[in-house]
Length: 93
Image 1: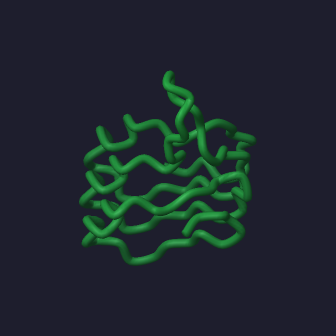
Image 2: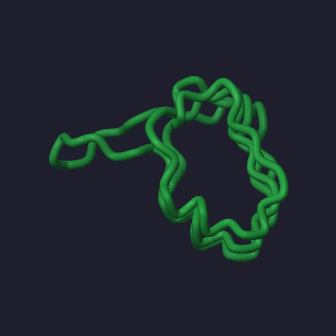
């Protein structure tokens, strides 16, 4: 799934985890957001933990989304098939 440089904005939806057969995700060069507010006005990470459900994911590219901030969820460790990832020019930790 390649959405590089498509002027996307907002956050990565939690429904990404439903794409269980996804092997590549390219979101580089967009305007993805950092933290968002939930109904209780507390910050919710823009990077959903559901990314860890993509067990077949081999490529993950998020580079050049400077508004993407917060911490990477620990569930990213579930990506046992990951071969290549890019998170340059993001504010993720």
